[in-house]
Length: 313
View 1 (cartoon, rainbow, N blue to C red):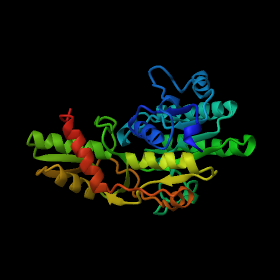
View 2 (cartoon, one colour):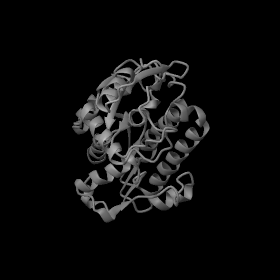
View 3 (tube, rainbow, N blue to C red):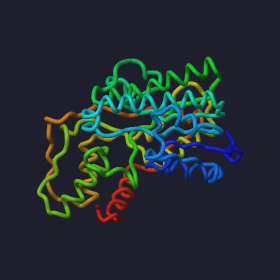
View 4 (cartoon, rainbow, N blue to C red):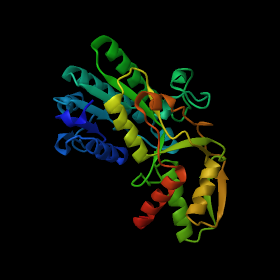
C-alpha cells in the first residue's frame, strides 16, 4: 500500500505507547499528517459498534492497536474485562472495515495467544496446537479470535486484513504503574526507587526461571508499518527480536544497569507465567523484509535513562 495516497488512516490506540511510534513511522514513510485519525478512549468507546462505524467510514487504511492489557496480576484480577473488551473492539472494527470497503486492515494480536507448551521458537503454524498459559488465556484467546474473523472475512468478502503477533514490548514512555505494568518497566521502577531509598532488597515474582523475548517499541512500529505497506497474506506473522533472556538474568542486568547494590529476593508463591517465549521471526523477514535493529541492552539503557529523566515520578 502506498501511504502517500491514503486520504484517511485510522490508528486505534494511536495516542498510546506503541501507537505514537506507529504514527511517526507512517509519516516517515509518506503518510500525510492530516490523514491520520487518532481516536481517544475518553471520547470514542470502541466497544460500541456505531463508534467504530463512524471512525472507519472513508478510511483507506485501518491499524488496530487499541487493547486492554496488563501484567500477570492484572490478568488474574480482570479476566472477564480483558476477554470482552479486546474481543468486542476487534469484532466491531473488522465488521465496520468490511462494510466501509477499507483497502487494508492491520490488526495487532498478542504473543499470549500461543499455547502454553509451544515448541521454542514459536512458529505461526503452532498457534492452534493447545491452550494458552492460563493467566494470559482470556486476553490471548480474545485476540486470536480476531485472526479467525479476518481469515473468514477474507475468504467470504475479500477483506484485505492482516494479523500480526508482536512479542513483549518495552521502551521509553512505557507504562511504569506497578499495578498493571509489564516486567521491564516494573523492574526498572523497583530498582531505581530501591536505590534512591537505600533499600536492602527488591522482591521479584516467581523464581526467575521463565524466559522472555523483548521487542523495542520503535522496532515494533517499523514492523507494523512495513507489514501495512508490503504484506497482504492471510497467515499471521510474528514480530520480535528473537533474543531470549530469563527473568532472573534480566533482573540481574537491570540491577547492574541501575547501579542497585542490594539483594534480589524471589517470591515463589507468585506465578511464573509461561515457561519460555521466543519467536521464529523468519516469516516477517521473508514476507516484508523486516528485522529488528535495537539490541536489548541498548534499548534497556534508553528506557532507564528516560525513566530517570522523568524524576522517577
